[in-house]
Length: 387
Image: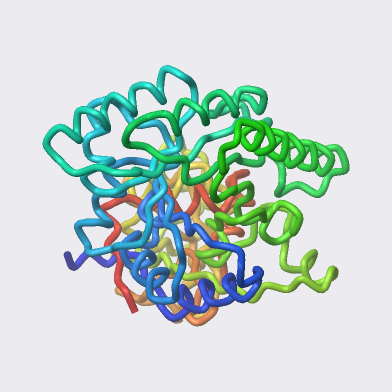
């Protein structure tokens, strides 16, 4: 693949971030690195290998296929499946040693039955599962009051064991007073769930509550294992900014890992009054030159980024003009611009060392979204180059 629209992965930055995260938490706290969605668009196998090399204990995926990809790449680290799998996928959980989050009598029973069936032709002993607890996210999980009963169902089965318990925080990335209070309530609800399991004489195993935001801002919610995601890839979670952390003496030195780049494939002159792109939303206010870029929303450059988006060419930002198309977008470089030439590199976002003047956070602000969406929107046709 030789397409000029591509993503450059700065592996040294990725390794740096993983090492910084490991130093940030207590030595006794386990780490589960989120590599779902192809490592937030950064190459899941690369991230998993680096995490494995420095001794990260768990990796988190969202689908069974993501877990299988890691196993086929030779990854031996424990893998945690964060979403529900279908009955037809359950065989692969055991075959590829992927530990699922489980909840609810019906789903747990399905997993137990699948384990019993698998064990008829394969060796299966003490296969670990994690009990998911809904403490306020409103997503998968049992209620805290149900945790003891459902843990009993797991430990009484022939082939499963309770490896741990997980919950997920809804607003830990917010500094608003009411949201901070809600996060605290979730933590207390999780403790209640753990106590309910212990009251049945069951070891709750590895208890895990928070992701990146809680890792940075809620030490009391680290429990036994923390699950960082966005900070692995060099971005802070919403309101838990670098400035905020520095003000509290809790600095975490992380660096963006991915640069999104393309090239100028055409430069055309347009007279005053000419319109650009679909809908004629942009009309040239004066004679100008327009650079054409072979990147669009099918690559992950979201349509809503224009107007407002700028891109970096030879150390200077230029505005994208008109609507972003599926495969192309247009940039106003001004009249008789001698600094921009055909085939010049164009940086959409990236770390400082890439030469980009924008980050994924900058694009997120323009598109009224979050860096997570910007990064994970990069499509498969954008080749990842590891550097």
